[in-house]
Image (cartoon, rainbow, N blue to C red):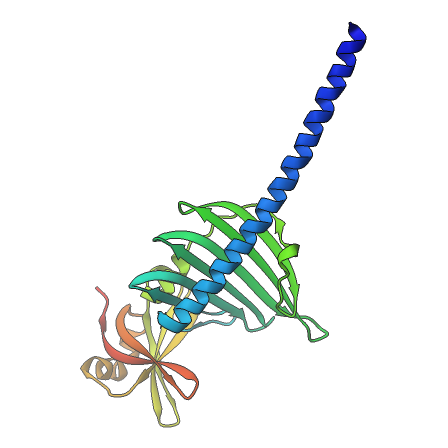
Length: 255
């Protein structure tokens, strides 16, 4: 009786072990399929917003250690992709965080960092975070040479929570990216209104002026008086000969 029970116990243990291996394999395959699904969604959305969507760019904010901006892509009057781009001017590291929305909720976050190695090759890292009902539930990490990410190389990693608040603040001039009067700049025949932002007024942005209005003339006549005063500026991004300029439309002091 004891002998029979012993062999029965072994049989149960081996059966559980086999089932555990099958479940691990199934989990890994499910992960690989989900990564492929996420990457396909990103590619599809990028093509869609580039060909049929509307693109809106923030001002470019420049400091001694960072250059940054945000880009909003709308499709069918809904926010489809929100992208935050930043660069370190000293290390030449490009960092891009993209937020992908599905049915109005955050669906994917893609965090890509590019840097140039000493031998001239491009090194890239990618963090991909999958969301359900707007909450992060799975994350994968990948390394790439020359910008190519092999689907087979994605490894599960700790889930991180990202928020698009900084990118939205850049676009809407809120929070740390509220605009203040800095100065005027003349470059050739072009005149620019310079505005600063940041806790230490460390970021500067340039807005091109076509025509001086009463508000601008007042700023120009009293630059010391109005230095660092909060402003409310309306501007429009216009592409010219491969360059994107933000043109001044109207302005006033922020209440």
